[in-house]
Amino acid sequence: MIIHRANRSAGDSALHHGTQFGFIELGLAAALIAKIPADRIINFLPLADLRKWVANVRAKR
Image (cartoon, rainbow, N blue to C red; front, side, top):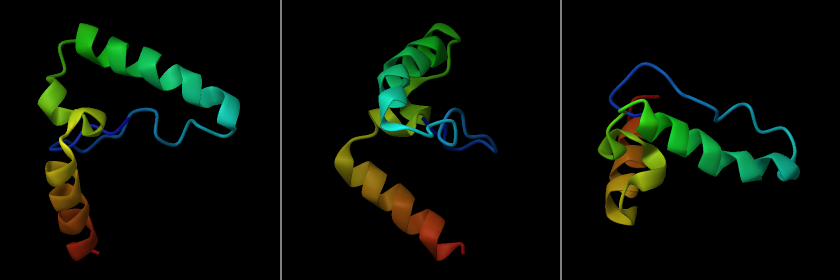
């Protein structure tokens, strides 16, 4: 899970084995409970918006 429009990423580097993908939903739920707006969480972006975000990140490299 990556929170965009922020300087932080949550949980994206914590996945070290395929069995840990099951915890993504738990992390997303925790973010929503913590009142992080869904529109700031990459996992909830519509595909077109995700592609724009990726293009923007790559352009800044």
